Amino acid sequence: MERLFLTSKHQNDFVLFAALLAILFSNGTLLAQENLATRLGYDADARLLIIHADDLGVSHSENIASFEAIEHGSVNSASVMMPTPWVLEVAEYAKAHPDTHDFGLHLVLTSEWKNYRWGPVSSTDEVSSLLGDHGYFLADCSTSIDIVEAEAELRAQIDRAYAMGLVPTHLDSHMGCLFQTPELMELYLKMGQNYRLPVLVTADFPADLLQKYEVKAVLADALTIMPDEYAKGVGAYYSDAIRNLKPGVSTLLIHTAYDNEEMKGMNIDHPDWGNEWRQKDFDFFTSEACRNLLKAEKVELVTWRQIKEAYYPVND
Image (cartoon, rainbow, N blue to C red; front, side, top):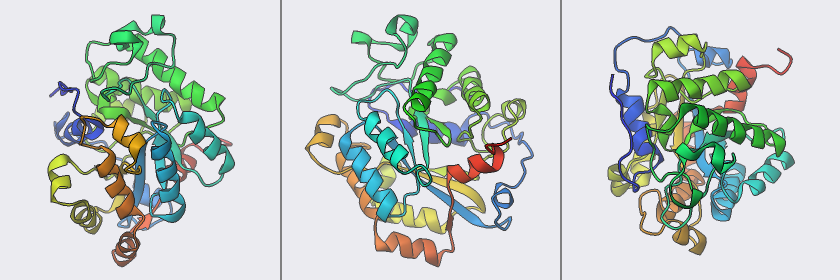
């Protein structure tokens, strides 16, 4: 068993996320899952895709670009960071589009930007192990946080979403912090079970935990562009990712925002996943080329809302 965690404040969400899903708990034991594609009404070998925008709530630019990409592009899902300053805008949008939005919660235990920070939803005196200087979340994922305090904060974030009228369709983890240790992974799955929400997992997750929490909605793949791939061009990476999708349900984890002054200030000294990067994600996933490629490859877009309704029907 390997345990991985961030050691530099300049790491971002999916450096850890991709590494953990690729090698964490690589013991060869897989849980027999029902075919998610057939559960959603597709052929067993169908290639299904969720195009998922992370980090809603961090800025007005992030929000409006993501809304635009959902309404007029190929993005069909997103996740929201409840401790962030612009989350009310997302909640209002979700309430105005109750039957079409597909917003999950990007559960947050860190605040990684240089001069742009946020703290917990909980009272700071109740979650002190999660905090660094000035009451903000730590800049990096930590394995020394108190698991009871982490649970209290995650519950506070989920409860705040419902209190704002934002009914989440799923859960995932900002910077992969909940994928560091078995204890945190178990907490993550526990939140899904307690709140009757699907969680973002692949078959690389520990089989014993998937069995314990009766997780059946397991994705075929979770893909995201990394800095070395970004340097070669976003169009090439995303086009290859779409062409090479596995059968089943996969997700492309992206970030959509405008390259404007707001984002430049937020992303200072942090070019990876920064303002230019997010604009390029937006440009690709609102392009005609992306739409045409999805059609040519016979890739069907599905949502977390569909998965939630399949496994957690309202009247169940």
